[in-house]
Image 1 (cartoon, rainbow, N blue to C red):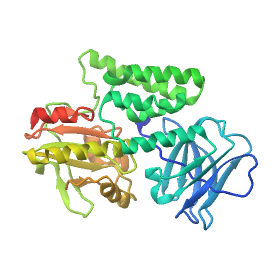
Image 2: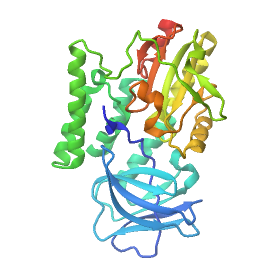
Image 3: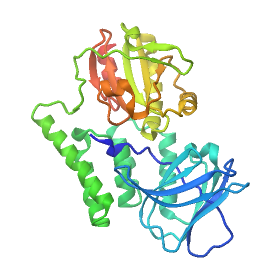
Image 4: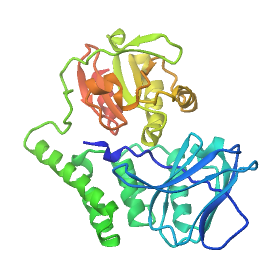
Amino acid sequence: MKKLLLLTIPVLVFLNACNSMSGHAIKGTVANAANLQVALDQTHFDRTNVPLGKATCDAAGNFEIKKDKAYEEGLYRLSIGAKRLYFILDGQENVVDITGDLNTLDRMEVTVTGSETFTCYANLIQNLLKNQLKTPDEAKAAVNKGCTPLMRAFLATQLLGQNPALFMDEFKAQSSALAKAMPGSKYASDLSTLVGQLGKQQAQQQKGGDPDSGPIKVGMTAPDISLPGPNGKTHTLSGLRGKVVLLDFWASWCRPCRNANPHVVEMYKKYKSKGFDVFSVSLDRPDGKDKWIEAIQQDGLVWENHVSDLKFWDCAPAADYGVRSIPKTFLIGKDGKIVAVDPRMTLEEELLKVL
């Protein structure tokens, strides 16, 4: 599947507060953002963006982006310095006012006024960060807590992944609801395209084909990976032969990956004494080493084998494994052969089969 699902789960937007309250604006005060550049874009499921405005934070972290007409219903991306944050508006907002700290955006420690939809979305994301989704039913329930059809559709693309066997009915329902709520919109069109792609996968599965269209199949010997870790030391996947290994493709900027990390940590701590290990390959950007290291520390990824070539989507092992969206995981047996592809919802069950 193409990169339709690769938007990271959004956090929040923070914009500058000017004195004028007329018109339509998104404004706010962000600590530790003094003199940083701000850019606002409307964004879509297929990762295309429409620039809407720019600003610069003042010495106190205040800034504002104004329009003569209302911000339309949609998904938005705010870039503050190197931070990229996503949020949702319903098109009824006049002035959205946010207060927060640049250092805690990922934890949603902000105050928002002026948009019930924004507030609903922020509350949902805060809850997801605190409570790891462990089953398909929990993922579906989280999607259905969205306050608008667009929000539910977006949550579906982020939380339900690409497994047509588990979630096809849910994707169809969300696509139908979005088409009724936003007829003719690019959002509805993009989601319809996604559902069509999932339908093709489901048809292939029903005919006996592998639902994963990548080159790696169950029973194959896992291609070796040899890359440097954060400290420059080279780690090799084959060096873990004799253990059951979860090969995990992720990135610090990928919110679904970060949401999945607590469960991986839980399984690692529970089964490491029985021969389970994790080999993490990061798809961070060339300038993202510091964020990669910070994410490892923040998420408590205590295993030793963290590697990356810091080439983003040009990551060589990702190409070898056919990785087109993340998180993407492969469970490897003690003999070095693939025993499961994407066992995110069933990781413990698969582990118990091979440990």
